[in-house]
Length: 128
Image 1: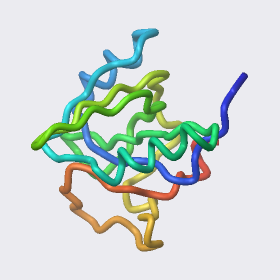
Image 2: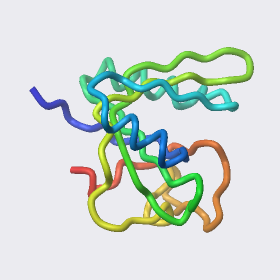
Image 3: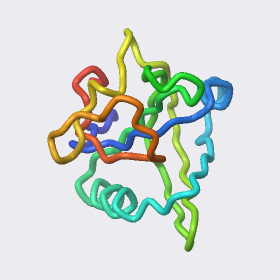
Image 4: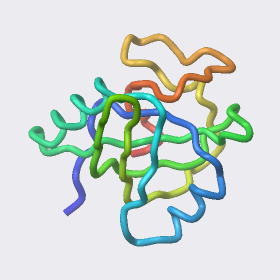
């Protein structure tokens, strides 16, 4: 049974080689970030109680002007300085989309040249 996507998603960046490798596997792939995703973790836990799944969308770390892949967040572990997270069903984003198409949780768009390690966004309709 296909689960509904949550209203919110996480945007991050990753190297396209790592994303292509994650796409080619049937198990969840581990990623890490040097930023603690406290809000992301709390929102992900909330989706689990709501029966939805939280998407992660990635921009290309070598060219942050485009969104390239997305997948389903399955686990987050936090410590004092880092976040480890696992994503399954990594797939290419259909069509050409830029991070500036994403709406932050506040309703504002992501700024050009956005370089923060992650952002909480409204799940874009092009994932459906």
